[in-house]
Length: 489
Ligand SMILES: [Fe+2]
Image (cartoon, rainbow, N blue to C red):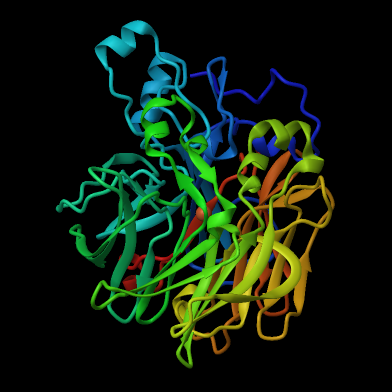
């Protein structure tokens, strides 16, 4: 398969290298380090995201479409090793064999010849698991929004096989951001079922199991596009933004997946609060229309449910992350939103919000193991210092007092900041932030290690080439053996 940069168009964005293909797959021991890696950091950061946005002479159209590549940074004795490999999904193998895009993705359709349509008339869902890393049962998987996790070997990054659930929970669309309940040692997530009528299937799965238990099936006329959901101690929260699926269009239009959803702001956003114990929708509340990709955290307080998320006034952020604006109209790109706290009183039908910081933010992370479902203090994310500069800073927000700390460096474009807690940490932010950064000046990527508390730069670990901008990853602590069997958001 030809893996090349997007060379057929005249790109003019300063960060354009981040949307071109990663030049090679490789393994490197003891990478050059400027600064010092804390000796306590022993484990691996494993991430996924596109490794190329082209196949042969065809280009994918949206950032979310590219063929998945796994990346792993391993830490031991103050040294760092690195490996990256394409995820060998069916979508990847077919693309490689045919030299063209084989399966439709989020914002791209696959064009099939008449012969292909006659021999294989039903379009196959993609298994290109390019969004997040998690664990299913005891296996490491790369996941996307189709329900086909791909198992891989965390040592070699070799692709093993598709994960098969031992159950029949119905649904064709899911989220790549399941939640882990540390009290119950179980995963919660949902599927959207389109057949025969539409419903949300909320499920629970014990940590070591490969069998989901359906806890709620909620009928819905038109399912909303939801990338994530919220969870508190007792509730699952679905924020149904008015970006609604037209099923007929999905079946017949031939449009890319996401273009079969319609923005209907007059319907507002509806929060569904679902009991984890009974599966019942215990409350529903409305707010003005808004859109979000990422929930940040949620918790219960004095009979109210607090839902923190990254909000946009409408769904145009999806259009702005197509490659055309990203590469040719950087000034039009919206890549980060507003950190809001929605308050849902369980006795009222209206949800209100407050803005937690004036800084824009995306790809939010928290100290998940310590703070998920609880009142908390810190959000880590990426942000944008000015229009046209895509994502060019890392931000730490104290949600209790609205103060922020920033990391920025000339010509540098950071990815999702993953928090790794220090052993026996006493405070929520005691640990490090790990972020893969593109340096457009030196044309390579490096792993940035920031002190979570002081926000001082501890180290830069230099890679010999650049990595295509990715989405999400997890840190797996080698010292905490139980963590290997627990899912991290
Ligand atoms: Fe995401």
